[in-house]
Length: 364
Image 1 (cartoon, one colour):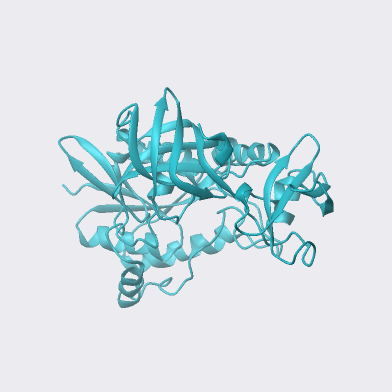
Image 2: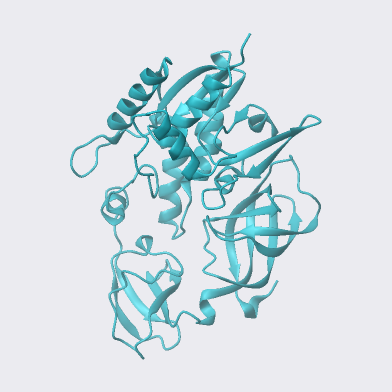
């Protein structure tokens, strides 16, 4: 009998092509649309309705059944509440990592197993290599679309059931295959930003859930008040746009270099080469290792401190659930709340949450 695969379909071209490939490979494919967010946008439109309509059309074209499941409550409890708490604490979270860990490869995986599925498939650009009973998470073949960063918190149990059908393809080839097959969403543009915000105004969205707390914008070098801000939650380290203080100082651009929650001060500095924009390392917590444990207590690796960043050479010193990461060269705008993810070439080793950043004068 053919292996049964539950496939998470989003309405996008990647999961549509994943469905096409799995069917061609002889799997019994059960496409399922996950409804993780139920609110409407500024125009009163519920984007999940449009997404599910595309899932239906693609499945009808492929002769596949389609289903829908609602994880909105689980998403609010496990992902969105974390997102709000992190912003309230002045940090910049990455909810996509938690969505993969808590929703797609926990709640949804449990659902797939209840449907007697052998595997759970998604449209992620990543690969799984299985050898001698061990699963390794590899970068996707398209370096511009690799999503292993967002999957680094998955372990052996989850990867043992995971299939990423488009992970070995280039995005242009995925689109070409969708067009060749005449799929309804072949030309649909990729979604951008945080999934539940989408194309909406970020400030307007966040202000619905967290009260704005205005404060002063001060120069880190002189202490001079240069303006005011609407709330620390709207800014992230290294940010340049949206400060509204152009023309002040010596004419160079201003950047966010720090936040003081107690005084509600946004610290800024002038010049993209300002030393406060750079760090020598960071402390990382809540570590997850794909293999189940760290490669060793001390090891060298490539690291990404944000998605799409080229791997940076680092040394990692592990102590229990935390690690100190020291970079070979200064790193720009390493941001608490984001994730540091470690690699050995194409192999994703794991990662954790950035808690504290070390300046050049604070080398650990």
